[in-house]
Amino acid sequence: QEQLVESGGGVVQPGGSLRLSCAASGFTFSNFGMHWVRQAPGKGLEWVAVIWYDGTKKYHRDSVKGRFTISRDNSKNTLYLEMNSLRVEDTATYYCARDKTSTTGESCFDPWGQGTLVTVSS
Amino acid sequence: SYELTQPPSVSVSPGQTARITCSGDALPKKYAYWYQQKSGQAPVLVIYEDIKRPSGIPERFSGSSSGAMATLTISGAQVEDEGVYYCYSIDSDGLHRVFGGGTQLTVL
Image 1 (spheres, rainbow over the protein chains, first blue to last red):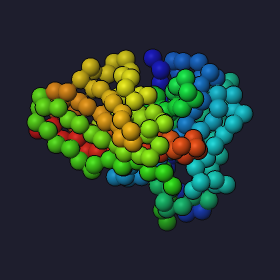
Image 2 (image 1 turned 180 degrees about the vertical axis):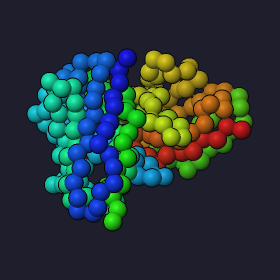
Image 3 (image 1 turned 45 degrees about the vertical axis):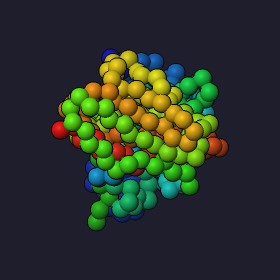
């Protein structure tokens, strides 16, 4: 079945770096755009970044631009999120999710992985 | 910045109909999507493109949209439907992907 498994979360000090991975299986990874979505403890969902199926286009939310970079390796069926200059407010569970695009070009996220927790604290 | 507004909580008795609303200026032109998140779990898509139900989602879940408001309806809500429901959409320029603040559904 289609599955997304995140890894790489942990505790890091402010200003530090972390790389998250998302391993995909059960579908043709190279055919789909992919997203990262995060959720701070006890808070709502927040979209972070998207990458096109072939990696040619990437978009990040304003608050992480210049600090986070989404990437992918289609030969390894793996999505990444490189996070630098981490801030306390980046503390969250980070989910990877597959893009689901409509005929109008609008898209959503389905399915999601189980998430990996990133804690930024001194 | 673009915002989607949901009520913080909705409470119904088992078997009753639960309605959760989502308002946003771009909804007349953009699709609404709905996610269910149970405690400690990842979100699950329950409605997409305003009214469509993914395979495996019970028929009691339905969606509608009129003007600047989208509505998720759970007809005959069950205890297992408890959780937080998020609407999602994009702004009129298609540049900002936004979730609503979430609605805690209680069925008891």
